[in-house]
Length: 167
Image (cartoon, rainbow, N blue to C red; front, side, top):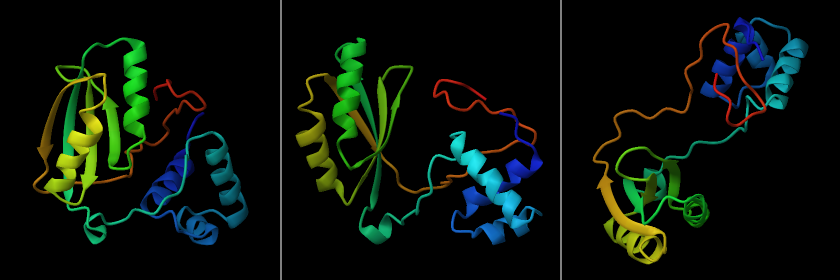
């Protein structure tokens, strides 16, 4: 799918504020509402726009610790990787999970209220997983930068409909 400048503007505006009405969005990208809505629907259908969400403030919810947990597995067979991913995905504390290169197999970002909750998560939920060999964690002292908007280049060719495709 080829993105033109207007598509890029639409995506940029929606990444910054998904609550925009179609009329507001159309005005910001210099289109009339009907063609703007058609473009948004096309971007949604292509899979480029996956979802619309509300970003919550973790501190207001008492989730005061942002923790990075590094996991090494006992082996790296496809079955063990799948089992670990299935198990870890079932825990609401896990905000992100990445299969990694390097010394550790996985990197998790975990949101918990305090150190006691972190300890319970590691001891009660991660340690009993039969695939896990080693767990190492680091607590973030301060969030220096956090963003959800992806960088967009104008006139960008985008692969859609394929999860393994790269832009």
